[in-house]
Image (cartoon, rainbow, N blue to C red; front, side):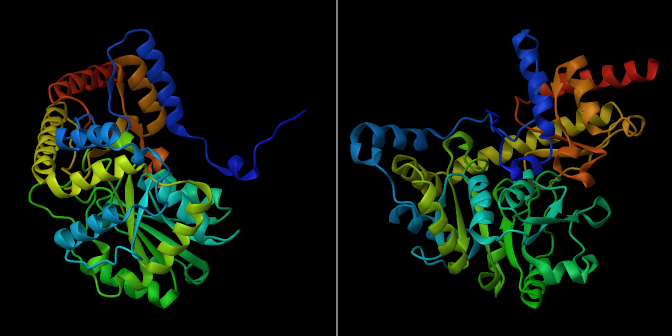
Length: 398
């Protein structure tokens, strides 16, 4: 018997990161000293307050082991609404405008399935977080890849999107602070333009704000929902993965337009049971008692950013400091641009043990760049830069 996968799986692009991950695992198996800067996988421990709440709940409240509410328990949703008002000044109805998620990545993928019909068109940023593209394809939708380029500070030029695309598009994804580029919204009037644009063409806006709290140098990230009319056209996703280093806990939330929330809740109720109650209660502690933790986390990542950029500058690789995220987005040194970002990363890992992400994994406009995650001890960045230096020198000598 021949077993075949669904056609939509065949439509997904090759997962470029799988080649890097395979090489990385082989290196670990050989007991090589790998400096892993591939994924945005936080290495900073979760706050003890959050862990203590989880342990106490699991041990002393066995009812929390039962199936949770798919939309999120009332206490969690109320806490999200309170935090959102405190942080952004935006009022939310916990009953209709807040939904708990098994991580924001799951939420984005499920939203595509809840909103898109076969052949519906979605506008996604390129370069961009791969789940935007993959979520649309898995929903049997079509994709228009909207360039976000260095010369425009990685903001989309909405006026350059063809009118035909705008008339067909049903949904648009945005993401600031941006993964992979680290770009931020410096002028909130950009969101005003987006809302006006969305209303004109009847396009749903999805803003992924997973890095809202991971910002530096005094910069504070806004919410898309701060702008009047935003709830009319869209929703915003948030995550505990980066802000509270809870990546493996799998919890996030989406807020905004009640109809979009309702459709996503309905879809989720058919295919998952939501987030474990004991994790939701731990997340409540994150939102209510962890401001000092977030400040310290921000400080750690900023120190790592500054250290790595300084070390790379010493070897002749100049990289602009991002105001947000846990990544450095770097243009390949000129002598490597013909090789391409994937082969650069493969050779780098094989020869030095430093693992980073190829820009081509984030879209065609990511080619010529690499992404480096700041997810190792600060002392390791000096070592990583020295390995880059040796790699560059060996290439020149060859």
